[in-house]
Length: 265
Ligand SMILES: Nc1ncnc2c1ncn2[C@@H]1O[C@H](COP(=O)(O)OP(=O)(O)OP(=O)(O)O)[C@@H](O)[C@H]1O
Ligand SMILES: [Mg+2]
Image 1 (cartoon, rainbow, N blue to C red):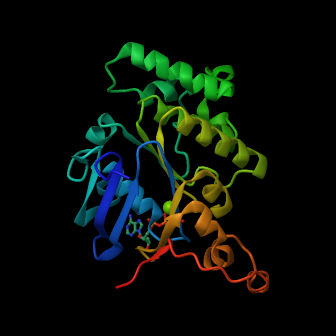
Image 2 (image 1 turned 60 degrees about the vertical axis):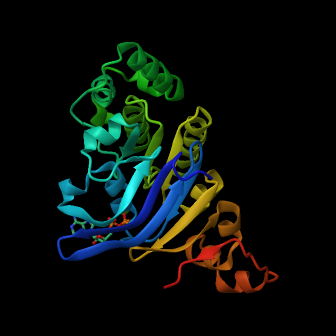
């Protein structure tokens, strides 16, 4: 794995005023990979994505230590629009489509600031191929779409900026299982088309099925990281994030998994 090739977060600390939300967080998203970040409410998952997308200041937060780079170039310290221009685009938590604007206008908003008209037309074709329902609803107000369709629109809007890396904040939250599965399939497809993905999810089973590596955040720190398949098999992750009871866990033969690295101070 080449640290200068993909997205790299090193020793990141983030505060909201006196509240420290992240400390000593390091992670990497190698180019072309899907990397998952798991963790409970308030663990700092959204804060991590906001730090990468340079949108912390809109929440009165700021980076107090550490560095974020993409393809070797510094993202931390630049403006949100510059991060998008470098190819890193976030789909925020809670979808946040422009409800009173049409589907088409929402998509166009995703390409604001992109000068390359042919590139934008190609991006639009890609989005409508991924989500045909958005073509059917092009003239409809976004607020009238179902939750799943709004999530598709939010992802589609982000893809209009032609990201090299996509940051997804709980894309399946509140969706019915079938819709969550569809979103997961789409994330896989977007990745297969060459876009790296940093996926924040509370649905650990879904995230670990998609990702090659995963990190577990607890109270602002990385407490566990490793290959997704190994995390999915670890007793701690099974118990805490996959809803498997202690009895079921102890019923399994003990396996040592040396490549999982545990954070320690
Ligand atoms: N704008 C803010 N001002 C002050 N504190 C904040 C702000 N946003 C988040 N926090 C705090 O920072 C910590 C991390 O929050 P964050 O939203 O990043 O967690 P999360 O893992 O995304 O949680 P969830 O699963 O609920 O979305 C929490 O303690 C939260 O209360
Ligand atoms: Mg969050």
